[in-house]
Length: 212
Ligand code: ADP
Ligand code: MG
Image (cartoon, rainbow, N blue to C red):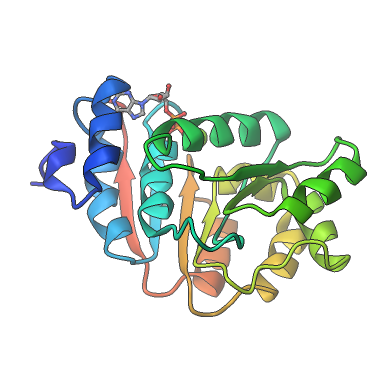
């Protein structure tokens, strides 16, 4: 049995205090099962329903590794839609608000391109976006991911349903091999198994059926 107390994890004291101030008193089941492996740097496949707290699970993982003094993109979170990317960015900022000067940038399709180029010039530590637009920024050389240490595929099943597989492959092609990859999905169809096999290394698999 894993503990559900956030203080059982090796989190920065300020982050722990921030979680308490957000009212995150105990870990949700998927957080309790995935966070020890995530914080240990392992690749993780986590399957759990909507509302189970998956965002904070990966947010804590990428924030604990973040080097704020290095204004390079260190984490990339891919989401199926702009709405989800905006929600994820908001939650990453909330969970990370005890760490000064963390820059989170969203890059999504359906938004004007040029302002995104301007934002990229200012730099970001964490990029959250949709696969098509991220692929486009990579293709144009506007987004560089040589310093990336963590890739997150959020709602991976929906990204595949929406036809993002070629974009995902093109993006992964550009990433350092030496990285942590975290895959979150509500369901685990064959397509997910095959993409996981291609892009994750010795993943720990965690499944939580209910939110309570
Ligand atoms: P999922 O991605 O699994 O659908 P979210 O990450 O969006 O779920 O989380 C659902 C809600 O639960 C969010 O409002 C979030 O702030 C809240 N939440 C996450 N972790 C905790 C926790 N440990 N304690 C209390 N609330 C939490
Ligand atoms: Mg989610």
